[in-house]
Amino acid sequence: MPPSQLASPYRTHSCGELRASDAGIEARLSGWVHRRRDHGQLIFLDLRDRHGLTQVVIDSSDAPAAHATASKVRAEFVVTASGKVAKRLAGTENRRLPTGEIELQATDLSILNESKTPPFYINEPDAPIDEALRLKYRYLDLRREPMAERMLLRSRLVHAIRDAHHRAGFVEVETPNLIKATPEGARDFLVPSRLQPGNVYALPQSPQQLKQLLMVAGVDRYFQIARCFRDEDLRGDRQPEFTQLDLEMSFVDEDAVMSFVEAMIVGVSKATVPERPVLSVPFPRLTYAEAMDRYGSDKPDLRFGMELVNLAPELAGADGKASSGFRVFDGTLAAGGAVKAIVAPGLGGASRRETDELTEAARGYGAGGLAHLAVETAGSVKGPIVKFLGDDRAEQLVAAVGASPGDLVLIVADTEKVANEVLGKLRADLGTRLRLADQNVLSYAWITRFPMYEWDAENERWHATHNPFSGVLPEDEELLVTATGDPYRPSPRDPAGRARAMQYDIVLNGWELGGGSVRIWRRDLLERSFALQGQTAEAMREKFGAILDAFDYGAPPHGGIALGIDRWAALLANQTNIREVMAFPKTQSGSDLMLEAPSPPEPEQLAELGLRFVGAKGPTSSEPLKPDSVA
Ligand code: ASP
Image (cartoon, rainbow, N blue to C red; front, side):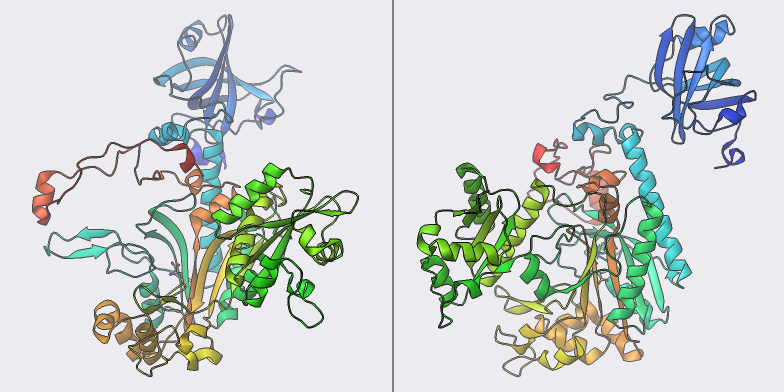
């Protein structure tokens, strides 16, 4: 940044700007005292602002008054210093600092503001600090270098996103936060209306309906850095309010949306973290069925292999029937289930305790058990099930999964769904534990062709797997019917259960980064889909009246997507918790520890809104973060 932009009566330069070529000029710097070293006649202050660090030296023989002030200064005081820029003596340069070749020889120093001793070290980036303390004093936490860097990364990310969209002809439109509920599958936050007592607004779970209405309005290409609100239990990658890159495009099919988004993602990644390579462009595309079959997950981490292998062919006898000799496998296959495996590289020497732990984990994920075969370094296969299978069959299985000497083969026999899901979770755990993923690369992938619906037995209706507005693949449109013929009486036997959506999710390094779809844009079809989702004609009018009516006035074909910006920033910054890339996040229990929110309202506020709390527990003190919440 050129000096002219930051110069003010307080400073001629920022603390990150002066170089050897500036030696000899007069300069004034202002900032925080990062560190102070008192060498008697010489006092050194490392002066910090968000642009960098400059060494200031005060010599008592040149500037006795400044020296007296410097001896009173403590860490985090805000000071202003002026004097001459000088090259440091040969051998005292600091190569790690861009300003490390010079120092400011201050003849004038004043304290602009004092600081109490901060509750944690600001100048030691690696010091472990209790997260609750960091959140309470977030303004101090944000001064720390790693946090300050992540805030800058996030700002670069959002800047690059805006640039990419404006270049591609998108219009940035703000949509309101006080709206009517838009279902995204979570609980709404409600805001009582003072002007209309007894009525509430909902905070948007996403701008979904509004962006579709903007397509009907002819905006053609819309985007927004949108705040969304979902009242759900919090996890490492969730917060009650979060930010989405929300976009929608007219006259598009799935490919048009995906190719714009893919190019945008590659450009934005390069602009934000140029040092991190994108693993494969074009991004791999997997259908949902393929992702579940090969990786046991609809958000697979493709930075490493460890694919799931179907063992059924190896377990069959000459007649095609399962006859491996191990009852659990044979019985599962005979009942229509699956026997699948993954290979944990290098775990062949796992102890009994380690294999027990893996079995426990598999049970926790829903499997009845976990079988294993260890390939010893000499090549022989060991494991409790070898006595049932026989050595030959065991070796055949090991060969079929591609295990090498020293590897461990983990096998789940269950319904196909459970086998996939359990092995998918073990795969993800082992990937982390065995450090199989290159931490530097960005591995984006598309997952497509999700089922439109899953059966919601409790409410006897189909539940949209992603978005209630998602379109159906043209070849599956005829499936959007009920078995009874009455559109308002869905049942688990409906052909609709087989319909696939024009839905695509974008995955990054094993996280779901976002998802979108080409939408239903005809009123009759949307009504059919809503009916399958259990909406009566009455409820449709009440909840979705605006969009249904709008579709009567010429809705263009359209589709879009939303990407979680907090998740994206966290992944680009190699963090596992989105709190690390949010300026002012909330705790697991939804508290803002700094502002102490939520808090009880004033009685007058309640009265004005015509509200009374029934059975409320009263004010909750802001609970400290539990250790396990720092996911
Ligand atoms: N509205 C969806 C969501 O927030 C994204 C989309 O389909 O565009 O998840």
